[in-house]
Image (tube, rainbow, N blue to C red; front, side, top):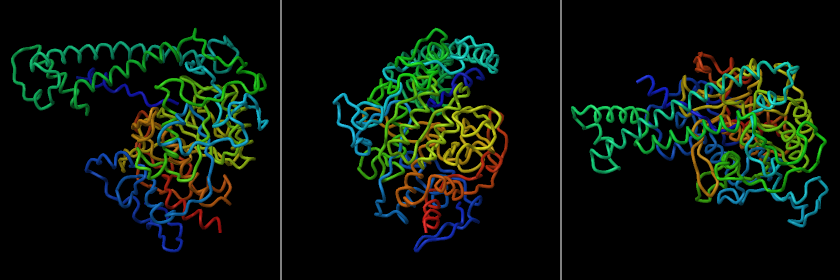
Length: 537
């Protein structure tokens, strides 16, 4: 599940709180009557607030964060708890990052780099996790693989064909439009640079231009559109467009490319038992742009209070890095084996910030989820970024067939929130579902680690899931007697029961959280720890 692609620029140009669950000594839960009467924050967020809004408190800050800071200040304090292993099943993770290197899991039963499977778990030299993708990177989407297979007897073949034709046409249109707009901005920038005799002209200078020259006037108009889209400079607009164009081109040339041969591991992805131990022991990114797993890991576990970058949600965790997600859709075989690997090697929480709408071997993954439940592992999954009701539109992995009975009680599916308390609180891209989405958590503009000791804001339910995984790890660290099923119940029952209507879906329907999720709540670490303390007793 990649970061959110936003085709906003071409559209612009072409159109010229808290649940009352009791208390512990010295800790009081905010009264329920405060929820839905909290003032909407009108002042823009400060830089500090932008970079940590998911840790803030609705009652104190009027921002629908998870009250993480409050939880540490009033409950956790200096209590370290028990170390919890969190498996991040994702793209490559920069395990050498300055804010992650101190929290990476090490397999103490394996002798590094001796070419042997010392612990007999089926994976040679798996020191910090495993890479099921091997040396591969680019991959097709799952429905493209279905078309390439030629299996017209598949009940979803016609659906896949229609989707392919629609998506290929859409992205081809995006490509043409982006190229046209980039040319417009390049031309306008050249005109304005010549006018000012410099390339670093400012917004105020442009807006002060009064000229009868038609070309200069058109350049000013283009610049005004750019500034009106919250882009402070033409150079930033050009970068946004180039990045978007790269993403579109990659979609067409890689993910939708029927001729692509991506898999390099030498196994049969349609045979769960073929070539056990395939892949390699390097879970790092294969290239700088493979940043998703690093960003996810930082949200959960970036070293707290080390005066670097940012703080993860959980304070006593180890990240087990598992690379299973390529630049395209993951294979069901890799996901199923990654879940089993995590469960067998001590993970108590798995974060799964990936998903797809076609899953030819979904039963393999559901069997793996049941296996993880038997090992007392909580599986936290991102709901997806298609603005869809996933009770109606298929989304995998799933712990049930459609809206049928769950195969296990260890899966929690997470939708995404913005920092804007009120009707726009649910991220516009977030999937939802009364049955298949459990809770909502911060997922828009989340600041976290990126490869090579860098940090960025990124958006997606991919960011909401690790926020919840971090809360789950915090609970399991402080109250290790609680089971995965109990932790899931705590997270769902202790969240803030927002009653106000929010807008969801492409058509901006007004819905309550109880209509678009099972719990009707947004995750709150502070309340979760209070409830956990009571349940643990």
